[in-house]
Every structure is written in C-alpha cells, then in structure tokens.
Amino acid sequence: MSKVVLEDVGKFKVYLAAQPFCQWSAQKQQEIAMGIHHDKRRAGTHPPTPKNDNSALAEALSSMA
Image 1: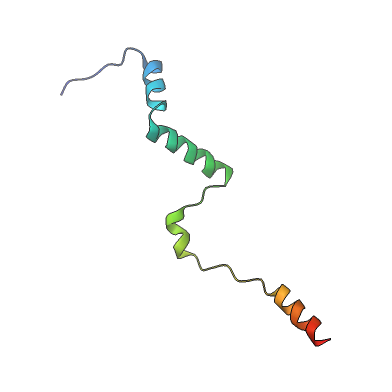
Image 2 (image 1 turned 135 degrees about the vertical axis):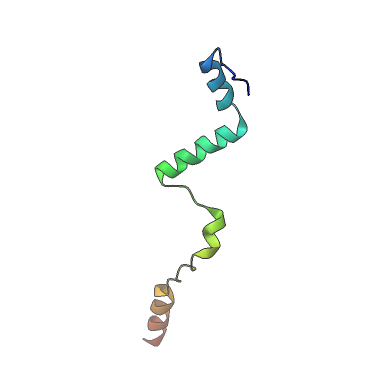
C-alpha cells in the first residue's frame, strides 16, 4: 500500500470545509452545542405534550356564574 503525503495541509482542510457534507456537519455541531438541535427522527418516540386545559376550564367556570 502506498503512502500519500499532503504537501499543503491547510489547503486540504479548506477544501474539506467547502464540501457540503462537512458544512452540514459543522452546522449540526453548532446547533447541538447551542442546544437548538431537534432530531426529527426521534420526534415520534416522545409522547405528545399535554394540552393546556386552563382556558377551557376558565371558560366553563365563567359560563356557570
């Protein structure tokens, strides 16, 4: 197996950073670090958020008065 030597490592890193997958990956890493990443695949595994019934309760109580 032959060994490949990169003559300009900086130029190679710039080339890799310009690739779409690398850009997408960097964006996702930033989103995860900032806590705003939402994994859409796992969205179906979480139970639905409970409905806030306070408005319906207040309306029902006001109609009784």
